[in-house]
Image 1 (cartoon, helix red, strand yellow):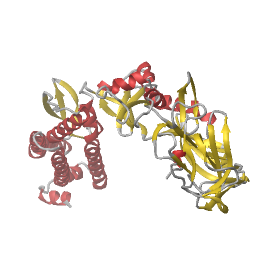
Image 2: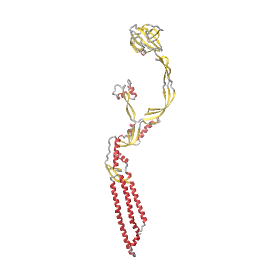
Image 3: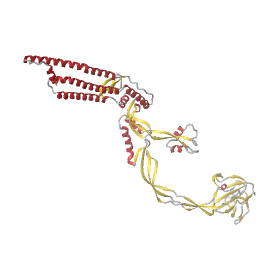
Image 4: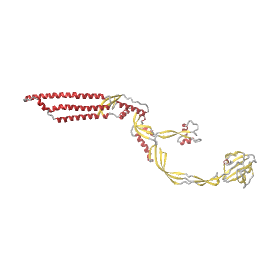
Length: 537
């Protein structure tokens, strides 16, 4: 159509070949000039403004965050693509006339234009997806990496300072000499929050990443080599494992890889010494009055000298709450195993009444015998010492035999003093006539001829002279009891006489082996002398 219009405007005349060549030359020159003018106009109207816009956006993006840069970059990309598309559409219309004049097919031109648009869009998407504006951080003039914004870096510095202060347990502030520079960078090189903090922690010499051993919530030691502490703990447990069903550590023992103070780092030799060390804990124990202090100290595995040293404020340790010393390993191995053992079962004692005996007398009816049980238990040990026992089963293998004791119910007779003179010798050991011997009674001194009475009801079994006792009287009482009255000046009863408590039986004298006028008084149980003061009322 455009060609037809041009043909109508051309003068209706026939040109010879020479004239036609001249006209074609003029038309070609005109088309070339027109194309150069069009290219110059396109550069001025489209390319130059786009480059200027790009420079402005880059300058404007530097003081803002990375997200704002992405927004402007996306907007600029879309605007550039739209402007390019519009420019190509406008220029396409212009070029279409030239294409027609040059006999270029309009479909081929449009396909070429679409391919150019698709290529430009793909390049823009690639650049936007893998590259962006990053803030390069310099500390003391050294580049340490890229971050999204200055605010992100400053927040990381504050967070790292707070964590370092907690770890070191002292006030700490990280104050790096920092400068920044914006530049286009691969998005993969931009640090996230954790990477920024790790980079900052790496610039604090007082901190170090260590394997930390913690016992019951307390940090014990740290080792830089990964797995060394865990391996040593496993080795300790393996030494106990063959003898037990289960092994582990008493308390909360853990190993974690974490940032810690470099001051707690220890080498392997120091670690072994520490794990085998023993901690001394001060505990107290009460020492009863009159206790043997040396035996008391030995019972806690220490010397009496050490006990006195720990309790130097006391002159006498008995009757005091004392500080003692016990050593406990830092690492306590808790091991358990099932055991079967025999347990002694002690016999019980049963008392039965015997109306034919006094309450002061007893006799064994049946001897007791111990039995035993077979016990199955889970036993826990701490460093080889039993700490707990869980009984699983008890089987009575041999039943114990109960011990039976008969106890009298009759009220025993009472005894009175045979003479109210002064006590000059009591029951027990004494030295007399140059030797030490047992004195089997009580001596009551008094004038010769003073009355001597029966201490209790009974029957006279002897009245006469007895070696050592001189004139004496022996009276039998119920339940195997008897009384003897010696050194009398005169006996007033004879064998076979029945007497009541308080009856006159003799007179005070000085016969036999005697040191002066007195009554020697004995109480015997089954003919064995006992202390009369235990019976006299």
